Length: 378
Image (cartoon, rainbow, N blue to C red; front, side, top):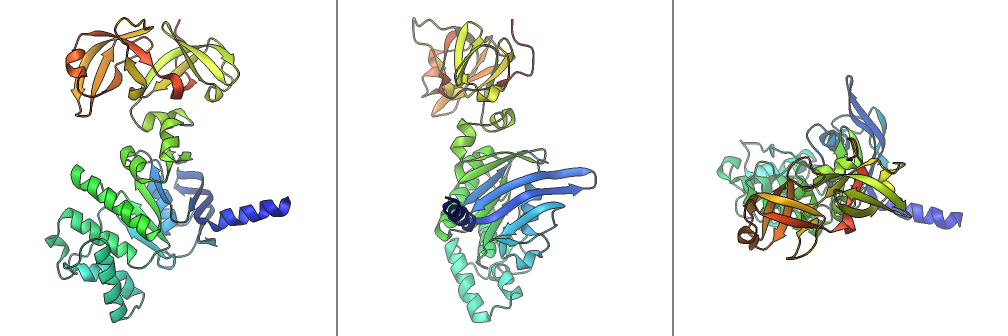
């Protein structure tokens, strides 16, 4: 049995391209990263998601080798690289501002890393041509960066990072300088390129939609700590703590009261409504204690005509979004402010006008609850 377990562990370790084991980084009295544990599989696209100052760029810089950890180990391809310089780590890096050399041509920029590695001219021309073809920029080899659009400059930066055949590709907020439409198209292109090459990629972003749409897995970070690691679906539908559910996606918070426990479920009262949730996140909270229920806009529906609803609200505003309408509700039991309901289709604009009082049905199948931060409602 022990031998079988050892074989499984060896296979799992062999599948890991990048690993952080208890990594801490301090800058003076500030701890930017605290005991980070993270394993990234070969060919995986891992997003580091969190607000500014959460430690995600520090983590990326530790993998890049721009500074060593104060505690713990960073390994790439099972090799400890704590003090290995950046140029010896076989990584490709794409910065937020692309960092293209303005005096060089596109070909010169893309081939710079190869030239620094002593690659011959013929080999360099071939690999530069292949990299430019990969990002659909064949034919612009002799242009300067200033002659390119923002999207083209980004493609050059991607080609430069990939031309060296890196073991790991590091991306630091690569889409932040692009407009919305171009950003979406470049996200799709980057994901297609990453899948085609199978290159292990670590991607830093503060944009939750970007992380959810691009990543195989997401590490959500806050205040120098990794809060949760999981697939986009796990992060969105099964958040492990209140910061994660509050940061990723739109969410409403309703204040309720724990009424009873029944096995793995808890009954929470919100106004006149009773909601069943999984009990795990409530810990040792006693009956009568305050519970904050985190409910996604799509988990709320308008009650049907004549349907008895325990919760009601008044439509305060409407926002037409094409495929759906956002209804902002006031005077909802348990809510300190407005509640967002997302109604599919466009009929909601006429059917539930501002000032309408509507019944609210709650889809409790994926509601998450955590111990309340305020006093339980009476």
